[in-house]
Amino acid sequence: MSDNPQPLGGNETPRFGGIATFMRLPATSSPEDLDVAVVGVPFDIGTSNRPGARFGPRGIREESVLLRPYNMATRAAPFDSLRIDDVGDVATNPYNLADSIGRITAHFEELLRHDLVTVAMGGDHTIVLPILRAMAAKHGPVGLVHIDAHTDINDTMFGEKIAHGTPFRRAVEEGLLDGPRVVQIGMRGTGYAADDFDWSREQGFRVVQVEECWHLSLDPLMAEVRDQLGEGPVYLSFDIDGLDPSFAPGTGTPEIAGLTTIQALEIIRGCRGLDLVGCDLVEVAPVYDASGATSLTAANMLYEMLCVLPGVEYRK
Ligand code: MN
Ligand code: MN
Image 1 (cartoon, rainbow, N blue to C red):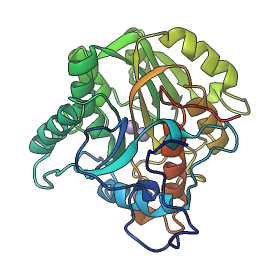
Image 2: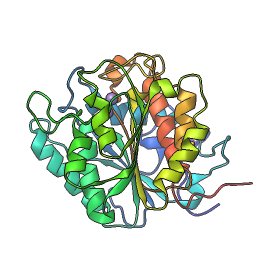
Image 3: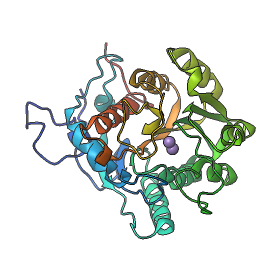
Image 4: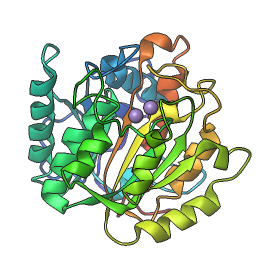
């Protein structure tokens, strides 16, 4: 065991008590000495349909109190080898999308001045654009593992260039992504035209439509993804609507016949060995999530991301 702070255990203070930081980790506003900063981005004015993802960070923090520090399946003990705190939320501007984007970029650039990995709780998927701007400023163009029902490569939505369905088109235009090192997994549903997915393929992305995943383990896919993404920096972006709505109903743009929770675990665990420089979990809207299952699932997915970050040690 190291001196790193561990999540507060359920036998020290009851799980339903105390301040609901992510996994009951220490809350800190200073990123110095951190290996990982868990950060909330409460923002949803980029949504096209049901709003509510501004409450995602709070919902995820609330359900994350159930999580324990040791991964029984993979034997990862992320808090032993890494110092991980909940650094709070970006002060987004609920009246101004463009100003919020600038605030998110500035916030992540400040965090990334330190030698740490950011793990973001959204917020709608618009937030990945300002985060990727900060990532690319530090690391150069990054590889991407993108789990989603949607490719999010629209040119515009209602004439707007920045919205939750456009971030990866903007990221390509701005040179933030390394196209041949991008994979999008879980795409499905109705579209406007074949271009909704084919534009991604034209950029060199691998697009894995959900039908290729049905009834299958995704372990073989992830072996191919590790080969495709190789050694360079990688960002992991997980839109909760990549999961089937039976697992994750609390989101703004649900699509039927999605990935299972088990497949999502296979994808995240399959990222072990990649040089992950940042992660996010977006589009959780607790107001449509009567049981809390979506936030609970999101909290578990974020924990699994912590378990595959570079430097995590695995206990015997
Ligand atoms: Mn998305
Ligand atoms: Mn989506």
